[in-house]
Image (cartoon, rainbow, N blue to C red):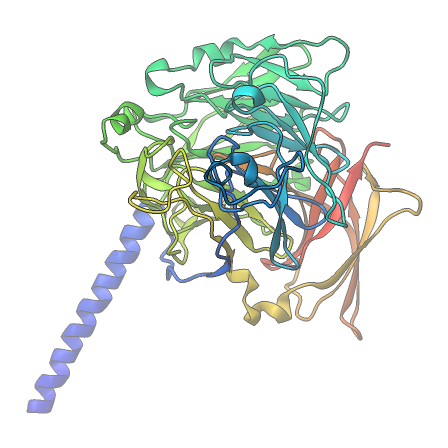
Length: 567
């Protein structure tokens, strides 16, 4: 009898647990969150001290990472032996507080896990950048004497390269501006800036000046610190620019200085751009629709009044919503869905699989010195092809807060490099809610786990016509790789443009799903040879270096560098 009662009690407990589990799954689905274990992926600390805050970060085609801060933050965490002019840095008080005796930029070598100092000559605070077709990082603007400067960093193999500054200047001050590389003439457009309502081109042709952009006047909110700084700019496959600022967006023909379309305002309150600082990506472009369907996604941001509230020491809950909109065609409507929690100051990265990673940031407040609280420690995975209520999942949490002035980028092996964070004017390590963060981390997504090794494409090599230094638009190239277990009809070839990351926006980031014209397998050795077709035009993929990844059933290879070139 006692055993029967014990068994009945166990059944009751089991039933209650099942009901509770089903309720949790139902609640998760109602908010568009997959019932994830929250343990996917893992974190690894790479360095305790990079020396400088990663306000800006970019991956070069020599597999190094350029990291730089502002020069006006005072002494950094990387002390130099000599100033740029050669004068020795001593232990005197004046030298110990002299910013010129400290590095404000470093180059991180992924293979050796080491950094070396780089020399900046002007202030890069809140600046912007893009890669040219030869892999040179063209970097523009900043603060004070740096606000009209044009800098270059051309990466090299022997670690001898450094920053240089052009003699020519920008036409206007560019502080909090956005860059987008253009399809023609191997140059870029610089859009906006603090109290700068214009755009201009770099390098300049002839006596070009800047051009007024009324849209920037219209979206400026003076009471909220602007809310249209670092506008989200994406190149559409028709050659026009999608520009999003505050809550509004346009399709802009920069060749004719003309607005082609004005899109509907994104629903809901608040704002999405600095200092409200949400983030945005252009979703993967696909050969199956000839790269003609272009869809933009915008996530997070700050509530209305957050900027003024933060200045009073009050931190309002951020925005939870994301909006997706197809910007090509004739029908345009934002499709809204919610993230698991409110988020701002976050990065949105396109993974080699085509899924979106949302990482870093905070839950309350806005951008600026000490203006945010409640760090967002859990990354989110967003799977665009899933059903609306099954797209978001919550991943394994970090223990390191990445707040204002942090950044993240995708590496060639599929890891995510995360660095930076400094909500203070100077390097401050105590007695503040979020100290200056100099640790360097890597997040390992689930697909890196060894249990997927038999499914992972290996030994990827790329071959194209002899004598060419790249792959011409519309041309063919051969991808050869080794495959243990193939998922039927599940092999993809994805080309990714590594971005320039700063202030929660990865400039020029895009991923293209390329067409495989034919694929042959040698069953004896497990080798596969595929003929892949390059993008049709620079409107789809501006000339330059890309990461080519072979993806087998959602498991990516280590990426290989390729270069798309004009004929």
